[in-house]
Amino acid sequence: MRKTVISGLLLLLIQFLACASPLSVAAAQESDGKILNSKPWPPLPNFESLDDFGRGYFPRPVYEEARTQKEFDVLEITYASDGLPVRGMLIKPKAPGTRKWPAIIFNRGGNGDLGRITDSGQACCRVNTSCLDVADLYLFAKAGFVVIASDYRYQGATVKRDEWGGVEVDDVLNLVPALKSLDYVDPERLYMLGLSRGGTMTYLAIKRGIPVKAAAVIGAVTDVKAWVDARPEMGLVNGNQYIDGFANIWPDYEHRAEEYYRARSAVYWADQINVPVIILHSRTDRLVPAAQALRMAEALQESGKVYALRIYDRDGHALPKNRDDRDRMIVDWFNRDWQSSR
Image (cartoon, rainbow, N blue to C red):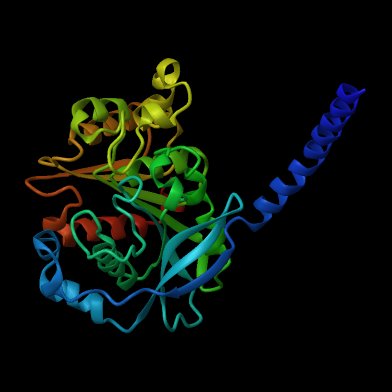
């Protein structure tokens, strides 16, 4: 009798979940991209307080302009993605006027807490570059764009479970409805920019059909397995202080590792990159070898895709020494009339 009652209760529970799940999923999808709240970004620290990396990343006048500018609001936002609250950044004009502004979706690099774009309360430094990201992205706002970025969903207790190109790609896709909810943004002129791991996220979002007109990547990882093999000291497979490690995060890694790597490596599916992409890289990049850019360009060429490639000599990972030229090329790429040229 007891077994019969328990079986009946289990059946009722299964039936309830079967009915409830589609409703909860639908509710989550309906809220995706909704900006839940926003608050002003903390003031950027003085140039003198930056570490050697920060002071070498920007000339003082460029950084100080970004720190003291009054034309744009820099906001930390929280928005909904798959029913979860996700933090991010929004840079918008204080007085947008009646014009519709084009917008850039920026995909940050790093994993876990490394490379986080939102303020963590730590001093701005090489491993916490949020203040430098604000200054960098301000330059694109100054060039005429609204800028939005996700910090991805892995924070707090889940921070070391970052899937590095898994479900958190949804957090990038859900920035599109967030932008479309802003009446000063032109929904027909959306673009995307990715740095390092953010380049991988850019290619994945394009593969999944994100409606951007053009994209740019800087120091992008395009063959994850080759990159990990070249830099085993990073501990990305077995874990480090920032991530539990692919072998511990990706289910059944022992048997499915190749599947996971290829799914995140754009060189294997360049035929699905149906957005014009400009690839920027440094020949002397010590974090992501330039071969990653060269292989991607070759794959795009073989697939007959629209792309441009620029390899700079003797620069860092984010191309700080060539920032002016880097930004000019990206802005010119985004401002092309792609509709009439295809």
